[in-house]
Amino acid sequence: MKNYLSMIGNYLLYLAVMIVVILIYNVLVNPFLGWGQFGTGENIAVQMFLVLAATIGLSAIVYMIKYRVLKQTPESFWGIFGFSKIRLGSFIYMVIIGLAFTLLNAAVMKWLLLHNITSLNDFTESYYNSVSFTTLIFSSVITTALELIVFIGIMFNEAKKNVHIFWPILGIALIIAVIQAPGGIWMQLLGVALGLVYGYIYVRSSSIWSVISIGIAFNVSLFSMKKIGWLDSMENMSEISLIILGVAMAAFILISTVWYWRKPK
Image (cartoon, rainbow, N blue to C red; front, side, top):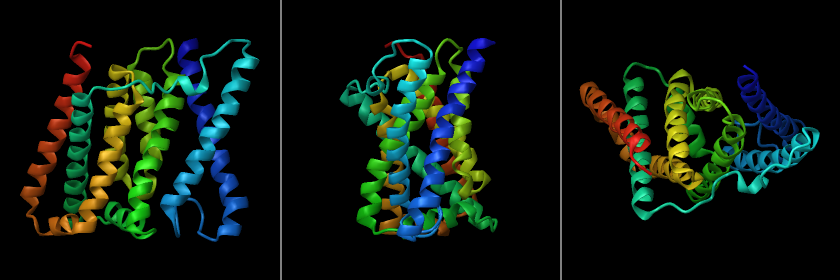
């Protein structure tokens, strides 16, 4: 029980760090920039970058204080992320999983539009239109990497010690789902699925580059589809076609994750 309470405590600690950073942004930074509260208004992608970068910096300080209070000698903060190399074949496979998630997300988004549920589509549109396309793609690379360093490299790594791995993976999946709230419940459900994939892939690969590859492939391909018109053209697909596409991509992601988890290292 003590180990599981420690897991929860670690998640709450670093979530509190992020909340503090968001509050600082809203109260002190936003009045000067005038972009709007975090996650709304203008330059949402840049807001994300600022908050995530500051969260990593403050987390490094909290990490050192935490282990000093515990009178323990921890691993280097920057060493816990697992920046070990991955093979080219694994990198390509991760990119394919990311692309599959893009198609799953797009299929769900357009299927929901057929049923007049616009929250996921509206959030994607507002995020896409908040900055220039060049800034958006650059942010999709940098911000995605920072996001995964925060959630997987810091939160998950600190929480997974001495407990069955399923529970910290479930925990990080739920946390990722919570931060997807602006996109509505369907975006949160997709966030749970993505968090589970991240967790299992990361544990098996021991390299944060694996999940960063998935995340970047997902975000860059989604906004690229939007730019060239493919995403909007999916509104012309029939309901059954969208369902088949979504189910096929979900099945591929599930099978790929299970296979990767069970394959020999």
